[in-house]
Image (cartoon, rainbow, N blue to C red; front, side, top):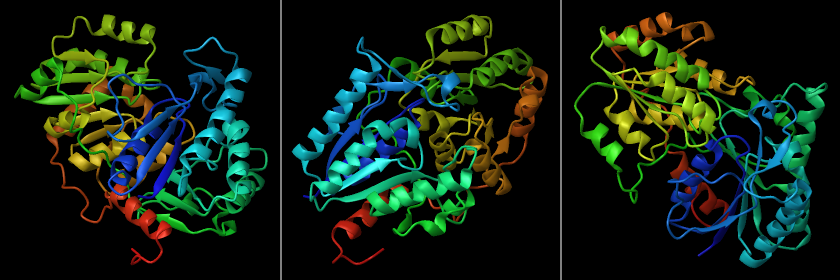
Length: 402
């Protein structure tokens, strides 16, 4: 069985790990997988059984630094940042040499987190290249990759394309090319000399081995109409959750729905306690930290309200639930995705002005009252399975191409 070493680093939330885990779920049926995880662990979130996991010392960025310079900090350890960086560099080389993969996949890098992770990724890739290993090196990218507004953006894009040409054998883009292509936000794509493969969107599977807890059992068995509100990991989206809580009393007499909020497992405790205080008097609202069964809740929901992250948006497309999306990040990744899908009448976008409680209550009631079209029949949502087939063809070229 051929072996794949998969490197994933969440610096802010958990979206990259969620998508990586779904890819690994499909890949592990054909390949032996080792996951290198450098991000914060999430209680209740598990990778597929049989997958080896190497947990690096955890690093993150603060929310305030997420879009400005990516100032790294150590999580869950008293070690200095410099000591953690050195330990991580050594660990990467050791894992590669011990596992001896046929393929190395780096999630996002070098097109995202390029400067933040260069301290370990450049020596890692240099080691792979100089080792004489025949391992293919592949970059795994989500649909929309934003190159921040550097003083010379064209030069920065050129530099990353040259870096990919030097160290990589191919790029997998987890997008439907009819919706979004790499050249839609990177102008120097023609500089790339390595193959680019579009896989379609990667959509989460429903968890098979996770027990439904008491809270989920109650909500999933309740026939009351529901609105499900979520903000991914919970590092962002506090303003959306507060607005929903403030709108809840206004909705109580208009619609018979129960509002279920999942605040996110990575939300700071002070923010979560504030939400608990705000929601304490709302009889039509329930606040929870996290559920591993979000797809099951969305299947039963009449409306989803969320940020516009990749994984949440894919869950919306998978379940076909009507959706209001509030794009949160300032680099427009979420906004671009939401705008393209809104043009297909698959969801509706909330503006910052729509978070005023009366306006939000009206938007929710209007969305629930409107007929919802079926999912676009041509949307490609089989990205995990397509990725597995593509990698089989890359690593075993005698197989019939996709």
